[in-house]
Length: 158
Picture (cartoon, rainbow, N blue to C red):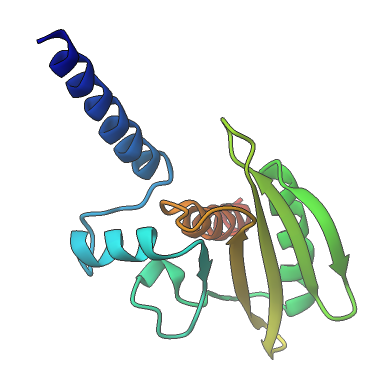
């Protein structure tokens, strides 16, 4: 009977830590397109990327009402304020590479950013986040992208 209790507690601990990680990564499991689709996305790979028509609305390429040069500068500032390490940046091509460390095990994720010119007063932001280790990120990479976009939007509001 004691062995069954230990196994039960172990299963509860594993399942609990799994869902806590999904919660901590702000995965929004119950928003559109639904629990199953989101869970499959977060368990299927170790990368996330913005695209024009991404199935997750928060991973659609964001457009900002600012020049590409201003957005690039704000992106570097936003990443620094999030505590991300700037691995490299190129102001001429308006791209950057950041390294993000997970809070507990210090796993490294690479975040690549490219600012795109639309017109003099509008630009977009292409972001790709990739885990250096592991096969599933449990929504961490999508979380990095959301964090950066939210930080940029909050900077614009101030």
